[in-house]
Length: 180
Image 1 (cartoon, rainbow, N blue to C red):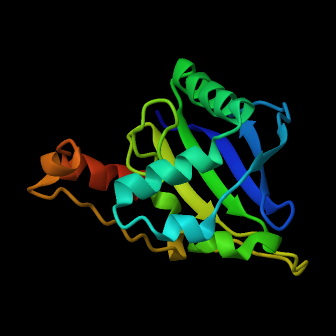
Image 2 (cartoon, one colour):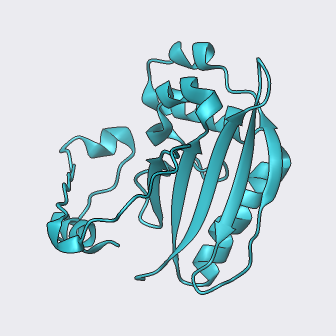
């Protein structure tokens, strides 16, 4: 599986207590512009800080983010569509300019709302966060020959205690170095 289906999950401030979440799935070689309209999400940054355990934090963050049934269904459909097309799913989380406080949330603990699996460590999901800018100056991509990759692979001895499966370090390294 060398190509990915993209799912952009963008968060924007709606009012003092709520945010809106928009999902935008894209399949490779498709010209369709699919979007799930803005859906509400009540992300209580202060309440989430009370969770010390990363698993419980992730579950609370997931429950807050995917409280809206339409959002859960759209995420499930994007995941299922990627799987049925034998594609990996690239989940890209974007925090809008008006919701800067959401950068403090530990998005890497986000879980699949159906399976409860971590989204950031699964083999079928590439998870990333990215930023946007209001700066109109052109951005020039660097040639790939000048780019460097940092790949960090964890395979702790006590992984079973944390519900993690063993991994093949060489295969993960190869995937990390060859991902595009």
